[in-house]
Image (tube, rainbow, N blue to C red):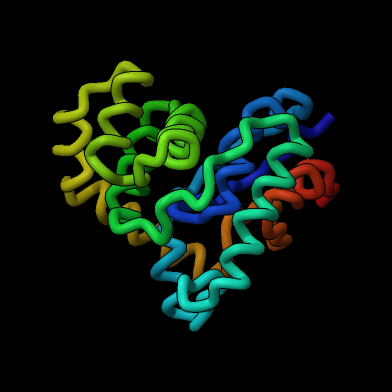
Length: 198
């Protein structure tokens, strides 16, 4: 049987990605899947395409978002977040460049879950020093070493390349998953992506 080839386009900073961060590892255990992770800047993509879905200036929409995430977390049986979490975050690029380094070290999904745990359950904004020190401690990584690495030209270049590739693919939100040219947007499409026969 041919193994599933799935690409996950992930960007820390998305609120609904909390749901994916907390459950993706357990979901993947149910499938024979080869996963490629592409950390990128959803903020840059949204600016390029003029898509700003949950602005603080639209409180009714933002309030709906937080309540929807609470409901879906309860449905999945994962920790219900303490909302509102700090949002939008100031250090999205730092959080995602750390993701590039963690992906190189084959621990991206652990980092993904840990940074959202710190952010949504403890109130420490993703990309902040408090959040990242917590993550590095949990993942047994050296904070100072990782912070030095995210400034390296190679990491910055790959982050830009992933972001450009997301735009070229037609990604407009996160989490998104692709099989070939098929795009599946949203946490609630993870299983659809895994089960799609391309």
